[in-house]
Image 1 (cartoon, rainbow, N blue to C red):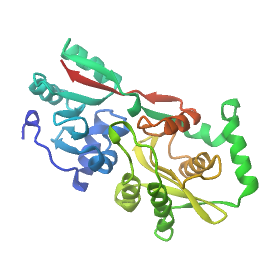
Image 2 (spheres, one colour):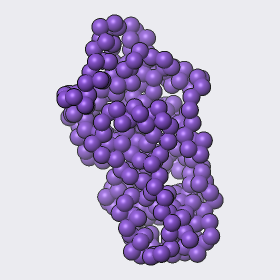
Image 3 (cartoon, rainbow, N blue to C red):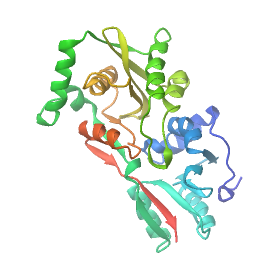
Image 4 (cartoon, helix red, strand yellow):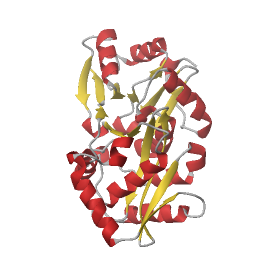
Length: 295
């Protein structure tokens, strides 16, 4: 199959190894292009994939019938795909890194309108730094955590078959309450539950936080690369004690300590409350994201 034809299929479990092999061999470290992310978000974002031996790109129906993730893999295949579509009036690319923007400017000069997509920026945190919570920048979080320790009996348990219903109950309660939606009406209502149900196949592990024996928060993630953990699930019951979300994330990262240096907190979907929390975690950097629309 010629990649320029861009026939697409559903994203299925059998594609796991091939997608991540292409991504890793290309040095692509964003969560957006990882198999787990594509697999879990395909319904909400209307995703389908064109997958070749050394190349893939993903059609993103959320942005239009001719909108695609920036391709990943062999550079000649990437060039061929884009060249075959560049004259299409509706052609656009999403989830571009800064290096992808520069590549497009070099290979197809004066052909694009570039748009910063801040809602899709990925927040990168230092695991050891967040576990230690040292320094003035974490003083507010330390205060919240001490208050929880003072007022509640706190327990953190690794997610397993015996307590998976507790984890799913947190997500179900969160989903049942009115909450904000992101840009383009995007929500992760089904993503978190699907991630936990398919956790063994997707290599997802997680932790449930209990306050006075009541499950109040759940965090879970998967290995994005050799030094980065992707936090794909982060949920609390509505109106939890102040600081619960920070406490639960810290317990989850403690569980993963020693295996990874960084965690990818994924995007904020353009939701103000989520953006506030992710910035409060003091990320060490962001993976900045762009979109490109052909002129």
